[in-house]
Length: 162
Image (tube, rainbow, N blue to C red):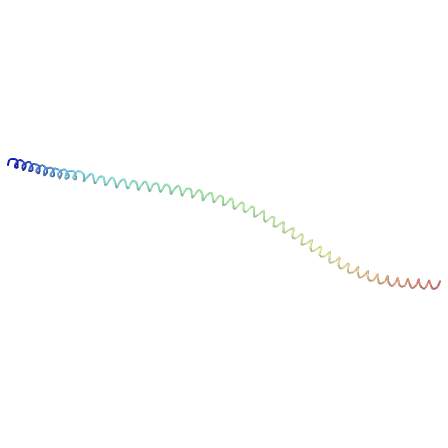
């Protein structure tokens, strides 16, 4: 029995030790949870602070990017306005040059029309004169034919009288 008793006592002692261990663990857990509860709160506050800080930095970076983009856009817009004015002036000069060329061509065209009109008038006058001379020539030809026939008759009569 002594062995049994001893084993029982050892088991009881072991159970007692296990029970004490469990109680100690529970006490440690409760002490730790009491200590960690404020730490958890501080940690959560720290995490929320970090998240806010990261969000602020992200917004700040986006704002800076937006400012840079707006600045570049304004610079490009001003440059395009300057180029637009330059292009406009260039086009204005080209337009003026082309208008001058058109005016010169119109003047040349007017001179050619005047020359054409004068030439047509001269040609008409020459045609009329040709018709007149042709008619006169006909009259002279008919007169010369009559004169020739008359001369032939006279020569024939002179030849007969001789």
